[in-house]
Length: 64
Image (cartoon, rainbow, N blue to C red; front, top):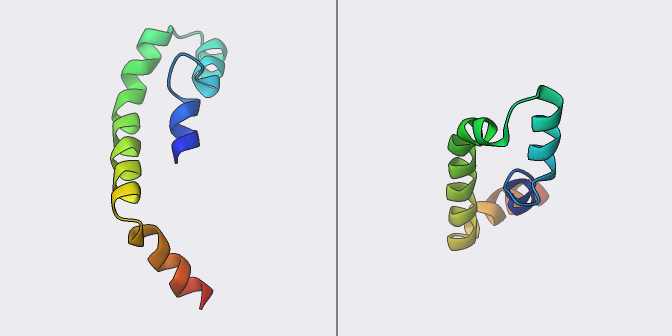
C-alpha cells in the first residue's frame, strides 16, 4: 500500500509521470483526479498501521 502511494505522489511519482506523458494531461489536472483515490489509500494505510490485526486476521485464517 505504501509503495502504491509513493508511485502516484509527486515529486517522484513514476506512474503519475507516465500517465501524464501518455495522456498529454498536465500534472495539475491529473492530480485533481487522483486526490480522492490517494486520500482513500492514506486512510487504509493508516488503519493497517494502527490496527495490524486487520492485516493479520485474513492471513491467519487462510494460512491455517
